[in-house]
Image (cartoon, rainbow, N blue to C red):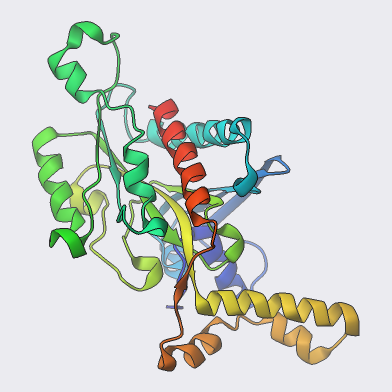
Amino acid sequence: MYNFRTDLANERRDIYQKVNGKEGEIDGIESSREDINENLKIERVKITNENGEKAIGKPIGTYVTIDIKNLKIARDEEIEKAADILSQELKKILENHIDKQGEILVVGLGNIYVTPDSLGPKVINEIDVTRHIINYLPQYVEEGTRMVSAIAPGVLGTTGIETVEILKGIVDNIHPKLVIVVDALASRSIERISSTIQISDTGIVPGAGVGNTRSEISIKTLNIPVVGLGIPTVVETAVLVNDSLDLFISKLQEEAKSNDYLNKLKEEDNYEEIKEALVPKDYNLIVTPKEIDELIENMKDIVALGINKSL
């Protein structure tokens, strides 16, 4: 299977089409797109059979991608709008797997001391948890309130425990009906850094996008539905070089008008060739933008608010 090095289903689909010279839909994959406004768009990818699963290396299920432009300068009302869109899309997925009263566990993956990986733990700090109030002070809770609990389990390097092992223990003891997992992802596009949210009903494989694959967190491992909610915060150097090369070629094409070699070069995916040149010298770094602190804060607000509204 092709080495996609991205967690986003729509990017994998696009890469598969480009590498294989395919136009239109791939067998086993259905796609649709909705433009909300100039800064917000939604793309839905549904993998329906094994052919689609094998083509892009993602499990059968639903993947919703919300793209948010100009997040670095987003105002409060724009953050609120993005959170509303996230809430609506998340509700649709939750309704397919759980009733309105079903208990939910929200999990924030990542290392809070590493900024590009801190999104999950930061979101957890903003989640409206209700389980303890319902259990111990039910008289103060409105009837029909859903039980919500939340945890940031840390990372293997600091706990010595696989995240899925921690979550199995929690699930076996508190018996939630569904788990929402929030994590930082890797992308194959510099434009998507902290400006894209992917929601899926197939769980999540921590570290898969950066070649540091951990045990998957899904219905297979926890025996209850797992909704993955991820935001790209990093890309590889090879991705950065590949995107920069495309921009450079576009500039030359504008000046030269036509050039068969440059046209052919731009049509190809040069990621693997670039990576082969960088890896031997340990230059294939994982990179993130200088504004990552602000981007993480804005995305944290959007994700936490969106989850709270949906629950």
